[in-house]
Image (cartoon, rainbow, N blue to C red; front, side):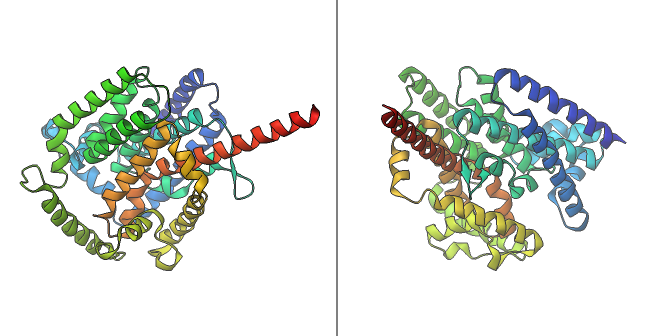
Amino acid sequence: MDSLVIFLVIVLATQVLLNSLARKHAFLDKKLLNYLFFYHLLFFLVYYTYTLFNPSDSRQYYFVASQIGNDWPELFETGTNFINFLASPFVQAGLSYESLMLIFAWFGYIGFVYAYLFMRENIPIDVKVFGRFDLLTLILFFPNMHFWTVSLGKGSVIFMGLMIFTYAVKNPTGRWFLLLLGGFFVYMVRPHVMLFMLVAVTIGLWFGRDKISTALKVVIVIASVGFLAAASNSILAVAKLENSENVITDFEAFADARSQGLSEKAGSGVTMSNYPLPLKLFTFWFRPLFVDSPGVLGLFSSAENFLYLLLFFKILNKRFLRFFRKSVYMVKMSAIAFLLTSFAMTFVMSNLGIIMRQKSMVMYFAFFVIYYFLAQEEYNRQQLVQSTLEETSS
């Protein structure tokens, strides 16, 4: 019964959220985002069914949250315990596992709403790919992105935080609350990813072609450096390096141990430690493919990865290099965030199942870069056609 109540509450909350955002953004397509809401919940049902027959971290989170009692404040720390911290009040209030899964699935949906805003606000041009498919719609409805953001766990929370933060960074002074809120969730779940985002924002601001005041750039750099100084121990603690005397050597040892551990965790390990960097990145971005799919879920993921690969082929040309050199800071920020996170992940990922889950938090940055490039190409084409028509008519 509580699951039905939670369902009705999140349906109502979704409409309140969409109505509020529609008042701020005339371009917002409520119909599309409502379809996306029920599509996302469909994957909640798929994932919930999956947990009935397969091990899932979500059940462990629920169990731990149910055992906390008066020790709840002690869970307020970065990493896994932060998810227990978020879950515990709901569990202590008597909500069932299914209800808590619904709440976290809604967190994931909020991430998709802000991903839509992030892309549509910066790219007002429609782009068709593969003959007739709208690229933005295709990106929003990729199945793998939904499957890993509908459960009680880190995936839904960090995706929500990343997309809120990225939407807010377009206008940091006007959206400072969302900037802090999104950054808070990213940092609490994965402090090192917050590091990558701040580096990406800083570099993007300084090297983008936008007309941004130097004063604002300096303020953001100072704020980023201050945050990194204050949070350095938490970031290093992710790899147990807070007391290290040789960070590089100790990180290499950590990466090797972590990679070996993840490889042994399930039967879908890949020996990435011996791969050259380009092959590591290819594995992280595009595997599993059909030849190495781990089970039925892997087949669906392989089909989606094949589409990722086709989209990446669209930027493998000299025009993209010229475009990127002159691009705005949101494009440069997204590319740097994507590459930095991917680079770090390749050193510790060696299990295809975990790779499918982890990359869902960064792929939208790559999609944004591709989408922006193709939109620029379409705009240039339209301008050329318009110019030709005007010359013909005159």
